[in-house]
Image 1 (tube, rainbow, N blue to C red):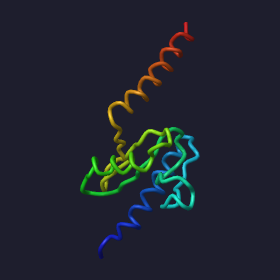
Image 2 (image 1 turned 120 degrees about the horizontal axis):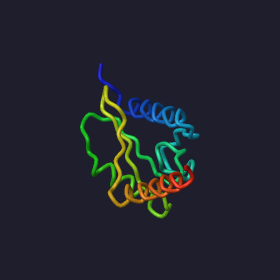
Image 3 (image 1 turned 60 degrees about the horizontal axis):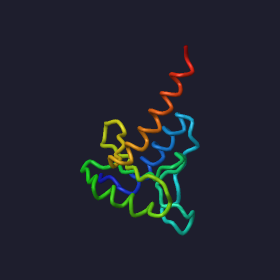
Length: 118
């Protein structure tokens, strides 16, 4: 029986939202077109990120990233592709400048945390 890719995608979006909620974020799937919610992200709940969710065996990361960048233009959010293959863990792809922006904030937080401890 062939796998319905639309159902597989929706199932992955639900799984991703559930996993993000486990980390304490109020994640949920969105409507799949901008006209309904004004947001083209597949999943919302991580402030500052535009999430493109893909569950596919054949990785097309550059195409997916181009879609995420196009969909979040003018929003001020960073495009991120959350993707997985069957029987594998979820991975996240960011462009290097966006990763460095996130890492820089993480490092500042870690430095501040280190200063507070004796």
